[in-house]
Image (cartoon, rainbow, N blue to C red):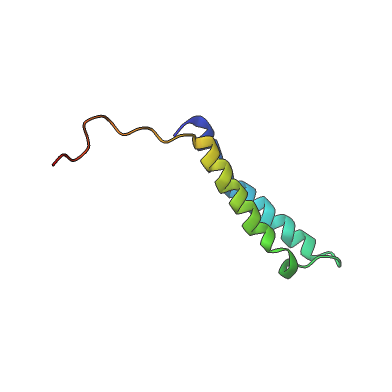
Length: 70
């Protein structure tokens, strides 16, 4: 995995923690409640996984001669 893929893996946890903390903070306000905003966690997680896949790029080709011959 290259550096961008490592970066995507490294920031996933902190970004999710920030998102959860923000949603819980919004829960203290009258206009928002955690029960109405929890899908944002799923959206953020999905976006981070997408970023991780895009930043990883193409998977390396298998080495020549590793196929099974009959």
